Amino acid sequence: MDKKELIKLINENLAEEFEVDIETITPEAHLMETLDLDSLDLVDMVVLIEQNFHFTPKATDFREIATFQDFYEFIESKMNGRQ
Amino acid sequence: MGDNNDKKWSGKTRGGSFGYGFFIFLIDRLGVRFAYVFLAFVVVYFIPFAPKATAASWWYARNILKKGAFQSFLFLFANYYRFGQTLIDKVAVSAGKKDRYQFVFDESYSRFLEILNQERGAIMVSAHVGNWEIGAPFFDQYGKKMHIAMLDAEYRKIKEMLEQHSESRNYNVLPLDETDGLSNILRAKAILDRHEYICFQGDRFLENTQTAEVGFLGKTARFPIGPFLLATRLQVPVIFYFSMREWGMKYKFHFRIAESVPGGSGSKPEFRLLEQYVQALETIVQRYPHQWFNYYRFWGK
Image 1 (tube, chains in turn red, yellow):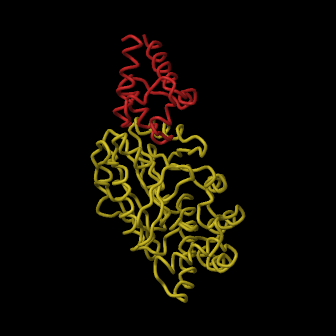
Image 2 (cartoon, chains in turn yellow, red):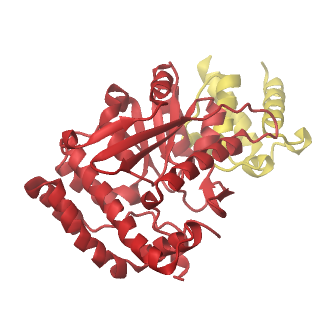
Image 3 (cartoon, chains in turn brown, purple):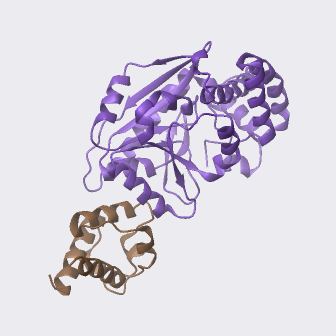
């Protein structure tokens, strides 16, 4: 899966899970604000990552993620690390 | 009645180290029944000298239980006395004196054990009624897989003292970090993924956490959403558990297995679980009104 496909997959999953318009998901947009998440809702994010990308993130991982771009890079780095 | 601080939980359970230590001494040296007698004098002290707790208990008697002024005054004694008894009992049982008590289980106990025997995690939700902690020795091997969610602020003060006088603890603690909700969630998820159990207090929350306002005993109160959201998202069963003191040296353990609620977009299944919890808690408080031990203004904004 190339980066473009990965971003498309991430955006589709996030839009469906958190019921937001996929058009609002842009690389520079703020992840938590756009998806209207608080720390409790992040359990949904953890489950989504486990089910779709097959790893369990740590709490510290999320502290370094502000925008969707950060999130794409985080998922990509974890997936590349497995290969 | 009372200032604004009456209206939220301070995060700490009342009771000084000296007070706890003295009661542990009494139980060790003179026995549980002597501690009960001494407790009556302590209660007389507490009514005027714990004004915020007394105001909360008075408000509960007047506005929730709808008692008259004289009846409410008597209720203050009864409520504090029952609270003190549960603390004495907790210390006595954890110090190995459980043979002095009688413990009975309600008709849902076997169903509760069936759920614990499934190869999956489970969430138990209790409340600050009765004496939830006293049941721990009876969970036997299940206790090793049980994690009680605790706020450090609530327990740090008395934990060390109780442990000095007790046998080894029959359960694990899931420490809740008040400043790091995500770490709490991931730790809870890891426990459930290992097919172990978490016990939450469903009547307590901290500011800045998700809550819902629900009708409870005729007035609106706020309850945390977190335990129910975890249960629905991670698809684990939920059991409501209350351990209530009966007359004499007897406790009854009450279990109610929550009906599972389907997910789906927009249905907010966590709220439907919360409604079931509130209903179960209402039933218990109506049956044991003197064992409501939330000493702050629980209802209203």
